[in-house]
Length: 399
Image (tube, rainbow, N blue to C red; front, side, top):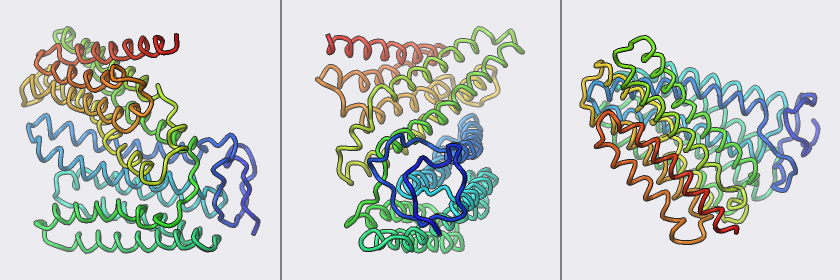
């Protein structure tokens, strides 16, 4: 067994058979995402796409409550598994053989979970989805136990508390699976709170040494992946317009509006050096930032689903009104703007005018809902205008 070194994991160097798992330095230079982490993210695209498809079907049929509830459950499991992997990797990535195998096991869990999404979404059978989730969590538990074996003192205690918390909560999911269907909704919220509480409890006396720049990059990359779903939806709109020239005048504007929204969302998210904020904050503020990204990621992915709903409504395949189809795009787009401002951008705004840009833009995007078939392109123009205003204010403050 060799000691863990601080060299960048996975960038062309030989993979060690086994390395003693010790915490990495928060001051490590040139820390970046590894190929294994990028592969892990891409595998999540499969499950995220499944969730998006189910959301489209539910909303297009007018089953708004069921669709939103199903999406919340599915996306929470995906998001939380990704968050736990990401923060653990930021502190303890050894990139040796056992680490890679454990990560591959988690990826297998993602694929099993994705296979169970359709049945879990409509509540007919959650067994496959929960089994996939348990596979991911068991592999992470083994990682924490391995970290505990390589650490001493407070760091060892924290790792053991993480492992114990994971075991307890996963036992709760198994119990919930065996209970009557009527227990699902209250049981889900209880276990969701328990899941979120594990890091807060485990790190109350010792903070794992995650890397600020690495965490900022990882969250940024996952935001890109979620926004990529919107590009795919816009592509579908263009394809439909080419095939059906009678609807081209409706579909092409939806595609253009969707592209403007995603381009603007990307620009807005990456307009601030968030790693600087993370490096200066305590554990509570960082946890809130990380937890708040559930709404950032979820709304980003939901924009793409909303665009598909708008396309289906435009060609007469969705059994909902134009207003409802427009809202399927404008509501998640507005949520993205609000939560990016709340969790991300507001920490870098210099005055009230700069602080007001994203909230006002979110209100204007929601107002576009009343524009009928022009709602999506108008929302895209509002988003693009938001970027323009932001660039102008930034230029003003620097002059």
